Amino acid sequence: MIRLTLSAVATLLALTGLAVRHNDAELLRQHHWRVEHQTAAAISHYQRLGNPIPAHLRPAEPNRSHQQDPPL
Image 1 (cartoon, helix red, strand yellow):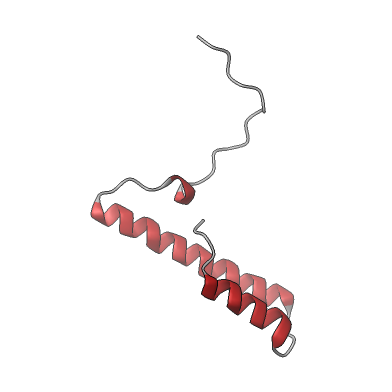
Image 2: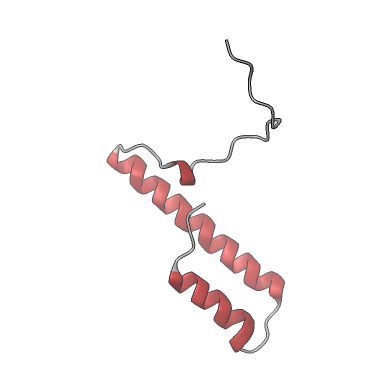
């Protein structure tokens, strides 16, 4: 996922604390939708330019045990 922008943080704070109270589930749904689409746009941008996708935009690897692989 992409990092939160100052604008996104300000919007979340304004929506949750300063404005008329809305359903928290709806606010989180809107935020999640926005982050997903911003991430998809960023990935598309890198792919279109033929550049490697940065690590913070790649999907996380499935959970592995905390043990290191044994040396070969």
